[in-house]
Structure formats: C-alpha cells, structure tokens
Length: 618
Image 1 (cartoon, rainbow, N blue to C red):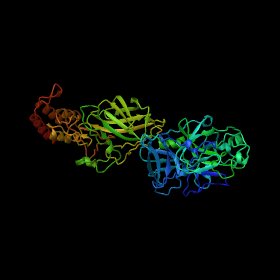
Image 2: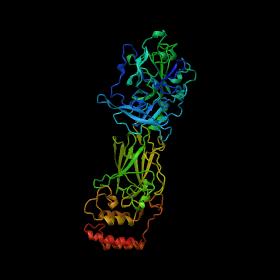
Image 3: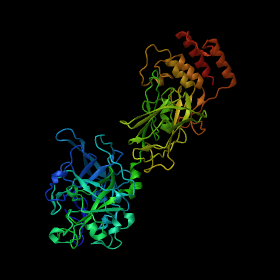
Image 4: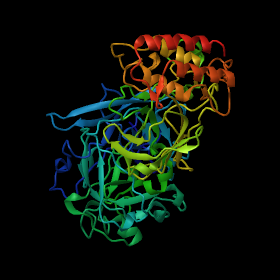
C-alpha cells in the first residue's frame, strides 16, 4: 500500500493496490476528538446508512478499498475517481451493501461491476476531467459513477444529491465511511472494515486555502469543486505535542475560529475515499484527500495521518450535479399495451423495440418478414391502457402527463385515469378504447424523485419496413431537453395476422376459427380471430373486422406492409362493395344495424364460404 504524499504533506485516502495516487480512501478514521471517547462510539447500526457501501477487490478479499453511496436510481453508485482509476481493463470488483439489517448478523451482499474501458459497455465512469497521475487528484473532478446494471433492493437506502450553494452556512456535516479508525491525538491505528459515522463542518471552499500551509498559490481552482473542513480537538491551544498555537487549522489560516463538535467530531482516514458527506440527508461531498502542515497546526510531525489540525477535502457535489444527473436521469425501461376491460382477456403486450428480419416468435407467413417490430400491430383488441416502466422511482406523475393521439383518424383519445406502482416503477394510464389507429403516445414533464427530467429521447421507426428505431431503455445519457417521450403504436383489432392490414386474409382466419364452443386460451386468442378478447371467435369479432375492413395501418403513408416490402392492400371496387353489401343482406348478418344474434353456426358457415369466394375476386 502506498499513500500519495508530497514533502510529507499531501495524502489521498483510499486503500491503494497499484495507483500512484491515494485519495481519501484511507478509511474514515472517524477519529474522535477526545481521548476519552472510543472509536466504537461511532459504529453505525446495521439499519443506518444502508446505502453507503464499501468497494472490495473480490469476495475473498473483503478489505475495504473505498466507500461509495447509492444514488436515487437504485443502481448507480457515487464514489471517488481515484478509487476505480486503477482497475485493469475488463477487471471486476465488487460493492457491498447491507441488504437486510434484521438478521444477526445482517445480510451483506456484494454486487459486481466491471471496467471495460468502453463507454458503451463499461460499468465504471470516471469524470473526464479527472487526472489520476502524480498529485493532480487534488485538482478536482475526483468522482466516478458505477452502474451496477440492476436495481438494488428497496432496503438499501437511496440518497439524493445536495443542489444548493450554501454548504458553508449549514452547521453540521455528517461523514460516513468504512475507513481506518483511531484517535485524533495519534491518527489511524486500526483497520477493521467497519462502517462509522460522525460529524464535522465545511468551513471553506478548496480555493480559499490556496497559499496556506503546504498548498501552493492557485493550486485549487474554483471550478475544481472542493469543500474543506479541519479536525479540531476542542482546545484553544496550544496544539498538544507540537505546542502549536492551535489545532484549529481554519482558524489559523482563515480566522474562521471553530473548536469543533466535541466527541462527535470525526475525520477521514484510509478507506474513506469516495464516501459521502451529508447535508440535510443529501450527498454534499465525496471524500477525496487530506493535507497536513506539521509546522503550524498538526498535532504531530508525521505525514497526513488523520490527526488533529489536519484538513480534509471533499468533492463539491453541487458543482457536479449536471454530470451526475446525466447518469441519474430516469429512462423508459419498457412499454406495455393492454385493456382494463374485465371481459377482455387478451394478455397485456410488452412492446418490442428495434428491428428484426425474422419476425416475432411463432410467426407465420409474411408476418415473419417483419422489420420494425415496434410498429407491428399489437395483439390486443380494443386496448385502452398503456403501462410505462421506468428505470428508477418517479415523482409527481399524473394523468395529464400523457396525451394519446390517433394519427390515422386524427383524433385525441382522452385519458381518464392514472395509477403509479412504486414497487415496479410503473405508471399506467387509461384512455378511451381504440379499435384501430396509428397511435402516438406523448409523455411530458416526467421527473424522478430528485426532480431530474426523464432521459426521453426515442427514435420511432419511420415505417413498418424500416430497419432502424430505438431500443429500450430510452434516452441518450442525459435529461431530455425537449422533455417528451413520444412512442408510436399500431392498433388494428381485426388484424389477426398482424401484417398491418385488415383484409381478406384476416377474414379467412376468422372464418377458420369461428364459432368455437370452448374458450380459447388467452395467449394466442387474437391470432384465432378473437378481436374483442372474450376468447370466442364469433359474430361480434366479425363486426369489428367489418368496421375496419380494407384498412392499411402502415406508417408514413407507405403501402408497404410487413411483407418483405412486397405487400399491398387490395382496395375493393364499387361493384365489389355492392356485391358484399348484397351478401350481408341476403344472409341477414345485420338486423337494425346490429349483428344478428339468432344466426346459427350453419348460417355463419354459408356466409363465410360465400364471402371467401367473393374475396377471391379482389
């Protein structure tokens, strides 16, 4: 293990395996102010700070490398950049959290993450302005986001970030970490890999300390985003062993006299790097590095060892919030179309995304040539609900966040109800039932529990034969500037073969399966001519086919269906339509504008046979 040192002054604080720099990762010394107080006084209960975890190299090497904090997404973790900058390409480390504090001992679970050095596939994202060589970790941007690729259990607390600029005016900062422990008069004495918490106070920004002690002039720029605090022993002076005037470093350098918080006061030690400094329950700082000046305020003459009189630095999260929000922005994970009608048994349909040259599972015929999966007819008759699942908890969603517009029919479908399931992160909107239309769903002003806008960018395929279109989850990695998620869906309740035409082929399906005496199973009923979801193929389904017959539901004005680019809709002539109307009358299909409920199976059979012949003449 090496510490990053300069003339015995600077030390980063993370447990270093091979990096030249070590930042605050030196486990939170959670050093106590008085020798009478014991480090065990600062141990956290299992139920406290469950969202503060420790980074380890492997399950068989449980020693703390760094500390990290779970963000509101439930899968993103904030830590220091120097904590993970030494990972080899494709190397996997782990973050451990208490996932169940009730058992004795509590359940502690490790979650893997891998650095692939590829921005698309990596789980590790270090701020692009962070410099890991030499002593530049002090210059700022010492932050990293780890994407665990899974939602952690709700028992692991999520923490929002502090977004104000008044950190110095708030009285108490709560510091948490898995670092080394000891006493302020001696510094780090023990590594036990246990979590501790305690208090301190931010008293200066990093740039205010330029030119003081061992910090050169212009060393810390304001844009580097640093918050500083000292380790006070509660005495006016002298500073014990070295007989300095005071151990109050901020008082000595900046005349901001403050003798500390007594036995509550703590300081960072090796292993605490990446850990949080909380203000009002929000992450205001990320522990990064510490400094000593043994000629003026430090209680001893050693290097930075977490003694009284030293100064600790945390990355100022409020100056990094835009960068963090780029990872925290919620995304649309999936979209499901369904019906709230208790007599419609068609299963809710999980919308596909992207494109395929082979079509959906169990397809047949021309439907297997599908490309734009999203725009293929949904196998749900007369749907009236959309469920949108997000990647993290949302706040303030309401009925009016969603608009439903039918592009083909040029009609708006009113939204009548909304529910949000916090356990599944899913909002469900109910709207007027749709028999057939090219539907455009627009979700606006969706925010997560931290107020971050939805990462909403989505490219809808331009037509049903397109080989492009977005894939879930939505977004481009940052909150959406337009604040809208627009998603296109094809509804055609009598398009039984799902080729985006309601035509003779669909009637042929209905004719084959009509008048079943036993209910179909819900899965696959739509493909057997059940347009309304009652699990029977009967006259009511023919009525829907009749209402939608000879309609194309391809997009962008294209007459190219999902038939490899070769399908078109045969439009019936006036004479054909006249013959069709005569057939309906002769077989008494409608009575007073309604389906004739007295028709027998044989009546339907004769009608079906004759209509198939007529359809063959198109």
